[in-house]
Image (cartoon, rainbow, N blue to C red; front, side):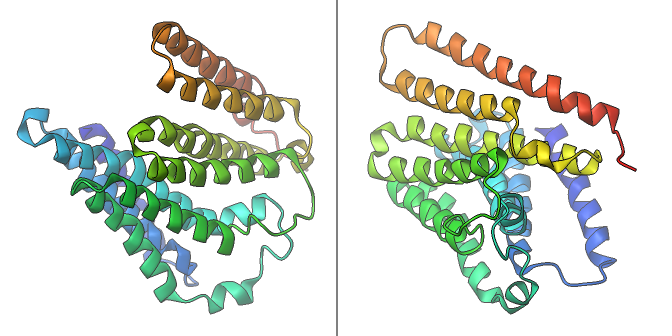
Length: 279
């Protein structure tokens, strides 16, 4: 965690320099970013100490700040600009709408999201999960525009929307059925965090590598990856209710994830390493 903290501090330093040298004001949704970095730094500091230093609840708070708080704040802050564009929503680049957005709106959402970690620390798991679900789904509808029509129905855009649905659904199920909350949260972890990371990385590889963006419309590797993630989510939920064969299920999940990442690497990591440029 000391190394992770060092990486986070370096990233904060890099972003701070870019912010000070900015020519235009960043989108107001970027307000989530400092909250995310605060979660990452505080959580890493807590986890850097031996577990016996703090209570079980404090250690859980540290893990939630790092594993949930950092990721969620970055997804909501950056995703408010990225996801409508990557899913090719009509009018996604409406600059007038971005300028007119209220700073206070994002401040309230960011405070509600990050206060949920304290609510969970105080023992109200269901309320905390519901707070996260409310903020994520509100941003998903208002800023990700997941309910608006898309100009082009590509496989990557469909996968991104599915990932946002998973992000919301995991926290909602955890709030409704807290006794199985840890299992339902994996819907958000696998279908939300992991799938979003891979799909956005795919677009970055294509765009910055100079490749034809039509590859994200119909691509077998992306489709197989999304289908594989759906299968892994199902197996992970089964693991939560299956007493027998837990070891076998864990190995199956591990090997399935390695297979999907290898499949993605053969197609897109190779493109990243080649860095072909379109004239």
